[in-house]
Image (cartoon, protein in one colour):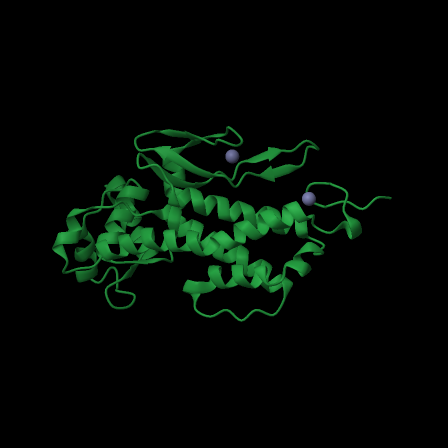
Length: 260
Ligand SMILES: [Zn+2]
Ligand SMILES: [Zn+2]
């Protein structure tokens, strides 16, 4: 029996991850700091726009980049999960977890090369990095509408969930996955995205933007302030509200109007 690289199948002593695949992974991990910095810029740009008392900035209305938000989460989760799998890692603040975990993984290349699940490790990490790059380079005329999640049979007939991120044209009703060609109604994707963001905290302006840009539901800042004023929504901390609280109120009002 000849030993081979578990990823590419080339001949490889002790069935370790081969040098070419190791180098490729190292290059990807080395890029994480730069990608995270790019994601941070796109996230902090929208945070700044959400700040009250800066009327100049309010005019350059940038749609909230949910793609960057979710890609940053996925990247952080993937890298820290694998880092924890490899060894003892003490994570500092949430902000730095991706960078920190990538550096940790780069310091444990010998363990990665002989890891029994190295195929999954390489697959998941390169995929998370690729999607994060895409979130940064998102074309201006497209909106992120979440991962595909369609289940398709593979060569052996097993169902595999497609995790490709979808970007719809601004006014399109349907979006087609580039990888598995499944067509998704954009309205359904928008509703799903809002659900995913239920526990996230936003300023009133950001919440109105989230509802409009992401959910396609028009709620003005004034009506959100009205909900807060009447005690139907409470500030979570300081001046931010939980998106899920707003969603519940909006959906209830919608149903009441429908029933009347
Ligand atoms: Zn290989
Ligand atoms: Zn797909």
